[in-house]
Length: 460
Image (tube, rainbow, N blue to C red):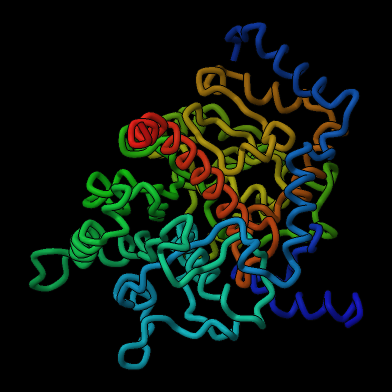
């Protein structure tokens, strides 16, 4: 098969659920302002001198090269991560999407990417991570599906590095957490209770108290009833905002990107500096609790600035389209802490090639062991952001060529935040599996160290 025909074949298999024809490349007042402000501008501009922001870090280059190699036919013996997936009844996963298979059929056919059960749109999509991971595992045994060889589903738990729990917990919370009719217990709570009972009775769980189990709880309110009982497992989360450190922490858990809801901007259609008339853009809920109080403070500081869009908005009506257009025509897009440290807005900005301005002191970022976010994001402490004039002077002080370098870097890394089926090298699903592999390696190393003297005593 020729190189051109192979490229065409891969493109037809790639489905992005964001209403776009974009295809990923396989390489793909008078108050005083304190001195740290000017220092901040200098640091941002000086960062790029002597080296382009577009240059990859060694780890990023290594990941890209490794990904291209893994696009070849997959030998299960060489997979980085062997995954055993419980055959939970459909009520825990695709049944929540309305899928109904034949009697005793656990999984839908995923051979034809255009006929897989669709996930609900709107804001539901932003927490759909378990859906994409499950699809990827199901496809790993289908020879006609071209995908990376990072994670492979195995038939026996004794062969596995990790055990995956296919519970669509975010969808369960979004769709079934409220009582209906004469219900005394919500469907969401009922499923969590059944899941705890099932997992804790399994020999696989008992072997290591669940430490080698992977559970996705990306919505901050998902798994509320079960998380403490299953807290020894590895969680895939959006952030740690609503978790005590004993239950979730960076040592054992994985931070995954939200699935963006705006349309991905094609690199050749991305507007440069001069064609983005808005300096700073924010559209969303303004009045939030907890750490999100800063949103209303910034609103009153910025709402009357002529080159700033800071307004209330939602996904209703034309909301997503307006956000897509607004971000794509703005130089900077602000990502402010809401009820939790993270929000989908960061990943919408990345998809729009709008340089993110992150104002969230407690945020944890996905794939930060591979990606240097300072190459394509501006970080501002919350205490500085609410000083009158601080933020605007900072952003207006960033030179066009420095902004352009960050913009170019955004176009290079955007594919790391795409969820799609089939999975593509170094996309969000592939990167998540890489992160899980790192966690498993660390857990295994610690377990072996703890057992050193136990083994020695047995041999004595």
